[in-house]
Structures are given as C-alpha cells and as structure tokens.
Image 1: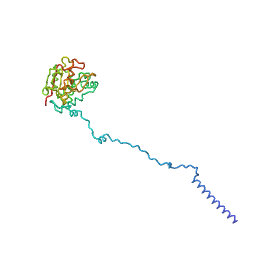
Image 2: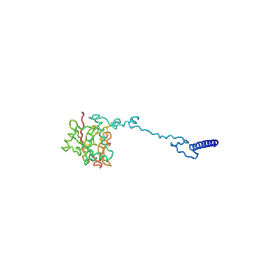
Image 3: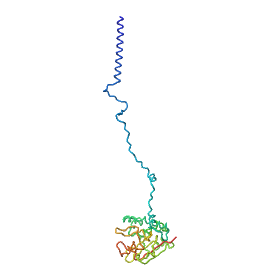
Image 4: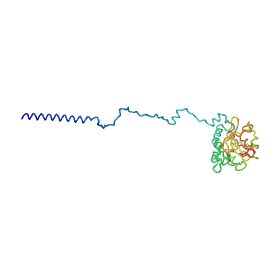
Length: 293
C-alpha cells in the first residue's frame, strides 16, 4: 500500500516537472520568433545602411529696400540741363532781366519743346484750346505761355489765347498789348526794315524781348515770339513754332548769328519770298523789351 503511495507521489512530481518544462518551451518559442517571422515595429524604421541626409539649402540673395541700396551706393545726381547750358556758354546773362529771370525764362521755354509734329499738335491744343490750337498758328499764345510760366507778366488777367492771331493795328489788340506790356515796364521799339537787313551787332536782341514780325511784301505769315536765351557767341534763340518738311513743330531755334548773315531762321524766313515752308519779316518788326527794375 505504501509502495503505491510513493509511486503516485513520484508520478505527480514527474508530471509537474514535465508541465513546467513544456511551459518554458512555449514561453521561449513565443518570445523568440523563428528567422522567417516578420516583426511589425512600433516606430517607423530607419535604414541604417544609408547615412541620414542633410537637406541641401539653395543660397538666397537678399535684396535690401531701394532706399537702403541707394544709400549704400555713391550718390549720382542728374545734371541740370539749364546749369549745363550755362556752364558750356550756351546761356549768358545780358539785357535788362536779372540772372534769375533769364534762367527761369530759359527753363520755362524748354517745357514747351516738342519732339514731333504730333506732340506739337497736342501741345498747341493744351495752350490754346481744342478747335483753336494748331502749331501752324500758335506763335502768339506760345510766346505768352512761356513768359507767364517764367513769371515775367504781371497782369494775371492775360491768357495765351488773347494773343491768337493778334493784329497790333487793331484797336482792341493795341489795348491788349498795353495791358500785357505796360509802358512803365517795357520799352516799345519799331523797326521798319526787313529782318535780313538788320545789323544785329548794333542792335542785338535780348532775353525777354517780345517780337511781332510783319510778313510784308513777299511774306505769307506774321509771327510772334519771345527771345529765350543768348549764348557766348551772341547767337540768339527762341522756342517757337515753324514749318518743316514734316509739318509744323514747336522747338528751340537759333534766330540769328551776328557774324554769319546766312545762319538762323531769320535768314530762312527772308531767303525766299512766298516760300512753301513760310516767309516773313519783309515788313519790319516791333519789339516790347523789359526795362531794368
């Protein structure tokens, strides 16, 4: 009986040991997968066979604001065309007007210079009004507009259109001329001889002179202009309108060269009577000249 008891106990121990061994095997198999098993990682994998790459940055040029850039560069001033003309002897100070007035007159005249016939037509309409403005007959209003822009006319009631097709012999226009050029501020001079017979050495024109030129026999238009500058060679200039093969333009032109009677537009206007591009000055001219303050 006792042998049977011990045998039972031995079998129980054997069974218990077997169970423990089987459990350990199961646990080992569970924790260590065979080589063919696939593991799903908890975190994204990193390929250790390749070094991690560093992003390549493209260099970026940073452009500072324009004012900063300008400040960093040497200052370059745009030359003043009027001052350049003075420096080059293109404008000398002569006559009754002050140097400031002559500079203002020349600067104002440049604002009316037009590069083409089309631009001259547009400018004529701005000066004299649509329906009246054309570069073929804008001479009087143009001269007055230049003088007003330069601050040379004291009568603020004068407007450029008043001088459109002006006739100094008409009573109304005579009164207009007196208002624009009062005797206490302007000297009136009349020359009966033609432009091409005038001795410009003995009687040179001066900046600010307002001229009315009579066409006379053989001329086909009267003309008005203001003298805008004189250079160191005593060549005299005006910004005025005149005919060209392309049409009438508003531009600066030399009126005369005192040492060359064949130079300047005065010679052109009197070279041929009844010229296709216009002739005038055979009937003399009149001048309203500013007096010294």
